[in-house]
Image (cartoon, rainbow, N blue to C red; front, side):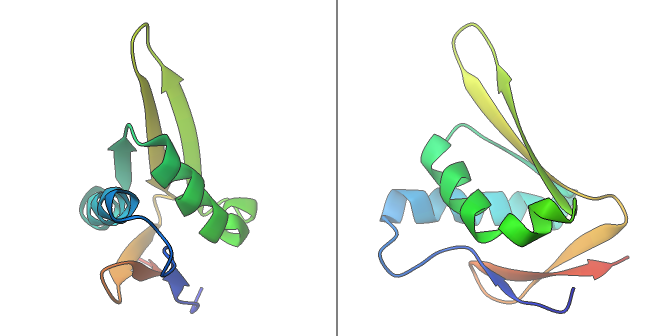
Length: 93
């Protein structure tokens, strides 16, 4: 769990970077994040693949009649420690 997770690359579009920044901000404060950006969730999930396999971060989709909301949650006994705008570590509370 000492690994730094960086969730963007240089080629990431600016609008997706902004959505990912909002996701990381929400995760840092609430331990969960809500977003409507399908591209941001797809890119975010690609970089946290190992954490998803270890069931440290969960991603779920809720479909409504008009919208699709993506929910990203961190395991309750973990917290996110921000390293940079787009990078973080998972630490035990």
